[in-house]
Image 1 (cartoon, rainbow, N blue to C red):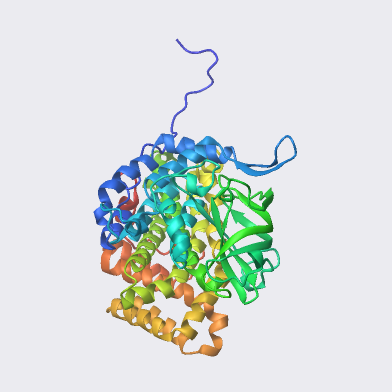
Image 2: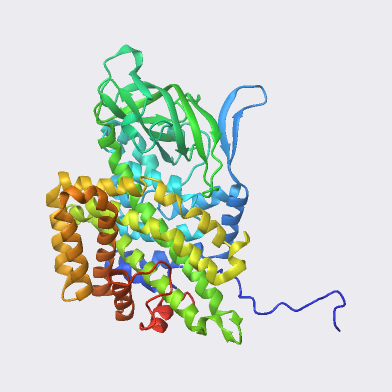
Length: 558
């Protein structure tokens, strides 16, 4: 019997993109992880891919973003509390990612875990981070900072001895308790101030030795000033820069003191942000806050730079992951949707657009996992040089292309991608933050120039490695020649810095794909990204390519 209140039957709507194994369905990811040394983690990554692609994970992501953090500055009696309240879904996401070791896996050997090996853990951990980012990227900010804090903490042995056992553990403890009573802690980072932004040498927050002593490495100081962007303000401690008499120092500043009282970190407000809504970002004032100096006074930037380098890797991995997630959703949509008498996936223009998107996704994936391998093998001269030069290059390129690629994937899905019920809108809002965190485009380009000027041997090692990888490919040879010509005009380097960085990224990605990707992918990427085609949007210049093979490889429904 016909329902008299029904106006139509719902048809031609794709099934939900959920309960998908994000690892097992991603050929480019699996190949990159195995190639770069992370194959030992394949079994756990398959299991984690199922968790991250589950409908339960998608619901947690929705709840954590639709119910953003809330700041409580005072209790009902007027006492300062400085507490940020999160939705339970946020804490569940944190528990999932920390249980996978994304907060610590690269360092487990430091706390003598007999069943853990240090070999190629950065690659395996980056793969887990790639999957968790597709589950929900915002909560990974404190996860990333906690993981990245370890090299800096190690610079001060007595501080590392107290904190590392709580940092390097596959656990999450959200209780508001002193660090020594918790089973696990998270570490944040505070550098940015109103007047300086990326110019941390302009910071005015001051640090005076506590008790009138002379101070020095490992000693207690009192910090007074502010931080303009303090992400994850419920972290158990923060690595902060402050000015000592000898110049900027790096300090470990706990949120709660050992006796359980508040450290003098007064949260002013939470930022109202474009994206990254599940994660809190605060403005904070420090009023004689207690902090302990890591490294020597005046060496603060050098002390914290290793943390910055680690988080730059995560920004690049995160951007590659978000691009993959957007592409997978778009392909899933067109494989199940028809228009004008044919499946969308059978229509030539749609095929070209999606195949073109897939080229950048695979290139970004290849590049970030090659970078992760260099972190694992930095004792090797070639890997160390790659890490130093290609970290800013990779972060620059992946974070720049992500917003445009995600937008184009949204367009493939039409209006369904523009509504908040699906994650595409959230991905699009999230994408720009990785290009801003840990150095925006110009900052990264200038970092590359500093390497060229101050560490020419590093640049030469990378250029020699790229020259060896170019082989006889005419497009790769021409791209290498263009980069060499820029390097031979040092007076023009400042003006050409962005062209240099983009050229290095595309060339590096092209050489990896030429050596390891299917020929359909490598040929199309190299011809369109390193050839002479002048294009400003996706879907151009690939009409000659084996787009069916490219799309089949990229499909999550293979």
